[in-house]
Length: 147
Image 1 (cartoon, helix red, strand yellow):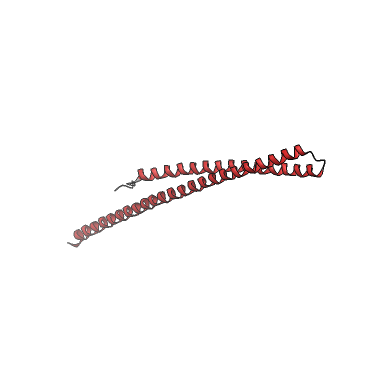
Image 2 (cartoon, one colour):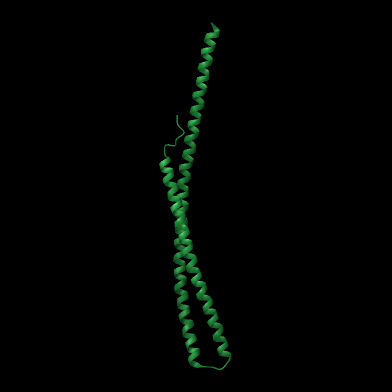
């Protein structure tokens, strides 16, 4: 009897799937982080320009500059909305990658449990064979000594 797992190739395949999905999740999380950084930068830029506009409104009014700042703030608002949509898409992709990884982990765990079950059955069979061999030896010994 051999301790080789009959589905080792399947278990190895499941492990490769897990590793691939871990890489995919890491890539998705990295992409989400990049998009979040971009969103944060846009929000910071908008806050700076809003503060500049407030300062301008406190001082001498130059209508052209104020109008330019309002248009720029409106453009930043649009860019922020667009970036929020990109961030949401990246977050959904990361969540999908996480769900894929969880599924792959469950499938691998199933194969690992099967491997352990097969190992236990094999060890039980070996123990039974050994017990039978010991019984046979005892019977043979008793037969020799009993005569």
